[in-house]
Image (cartoon, rainbow, N blue to C red; front, side):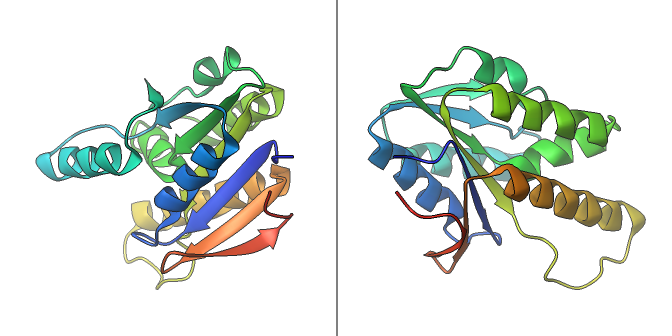
Length: 173
């Protein structure tokens, strides 16, 4: 049996997205990719293209940089939904000066109400140095709170370091 909510956490370029994609493929379910990034420059566009190439075919993509609930509302038990990533989603809200607590609650409520298998990817940002500016410190704190909340709700939490998964909570299917 697959966990209802899986949380895949790791540092930048740790292999977390590739691991999450593999979990989705192995589920054998209809794959939905919820993309949270917004393209503001060529570097981000290039990174998105790399992710699309890495994923390969067999995915339906939904772009949801802010409101994730509509992306999840029509999914059923025959779907696996990969949300990549919570970090970009949070960044979008932070830069738009939205109410992050309200957005986080709506996101977690949508995950709880969704009958599909959900895999959420996020960055671990709390193991580095204290950022020098207020916006970066605010982001780090908000990301930490979001990660704690997702992990608390998740059935399976996996940390990926150097491409190697380590289960922190639950059991791999």
